[in-house]
Image (cartoon, rainbow, N blue to C red; front, side):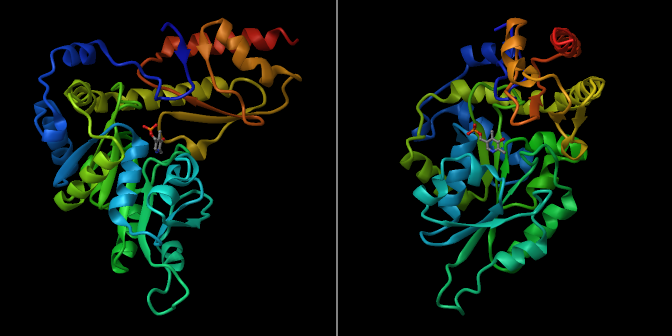
Amino acid sequence: MGYIDFRSDSVTQPTEEMREAMRFADVGYDVFRDDPTVNRLEEMTAERTGKEAGLLIPTGTMGNQLSVLSWTNRGEEIILSYDSHILEFEVGAASVLSSVGYRVIHSPDSILRGEDIEQAIRPYPEDIHVPRTSLVCLENALGRGSVVPLNMMKEAYDTAKNHGLNVHTDGARVFNAATALGVDIKEIARYTDSLAIHLSKGLCAPVGGVLVGSADFIEKARRYRHMLGGGMSQSGVLAAAGIIALEKMTKRLKEDHENARYLSSRLESFPGVTVDQSRADINLVFFRWENVPAGFLENLPAQMLKSGIKISGASGRDFRFAVHNDISRSDIDYTIKTIEKELNTYQ
Ligand SMILES: *Cc1c(COP(=O)(O)O)cnc(C)c1O
């Protein structure tokens, strides 16, 4: 505690109100569907997104994998972007758990166009050599920090549907996307068959999220969740915090986005810093730092830590800073001052 932590929005602490709600949560055995708080969170999320049903998920990764398991059969293929979370950051789980292949699309802005999807769909069953394509996986917001406009989600969804495919959307930051697009989350959810929502990133719940979709899909996913060891007992303790995340914390994301833009403009006051404006729709700030004294970038994380600031190391010259509920404007001002001081030691 006490650190200003830019490494991720997964570092957010549960709010006092969440801790109180967890303490007094009405709970039961969720595997018997006996936990009233879990049931309430699942129903609320389904209602909020315009879907039939919801399922509490312990992590976003499990939500994505339950979707791949539920929508595909062994030996089929899923279409996704080269930098999607499912492909890059889930330990290859879809190939292990679902035994599916990856059909990867390399689009410079990570958005899957209708024509890209069409080209990626296999000529099954006409051609005896190819696997069947069964699922298109989207993200909104994209992990790269930009959002997918609704018309492009619609294009991807319509293309998939025209070919009898299902669509899953990784919505780790879907409320950030809705905020940035200025639309109700239903508008995003209508262009996907399943949507994995995180309550534990920028929305500050300590654990978990909700997977939503049709009642049939959720029934399947619930069985797979149990198979993977995700049938939890009195998980209403988590759902109680999740309800506050959903009802309250979704309303304040605009502040994080504004703070991220404020941080961007302050960072750009340093010579050599360029913020990537094509990835600046939500709470993430991607920037490159060129023409700096030797050793400065490498030492920066350790030096900042001495002043109580946590940042991830640069990948080459590229940084990612995440802004969230536990980072205020004055924290950003203090951070800029600290970087300034550190830079001055090199002069
Ligand atoms: C963080 C993240 C996930 C995974 O969430 P976990 O809860 O850490 O498993 C999935 N997709 C995207 C785009 C993410 O940013």
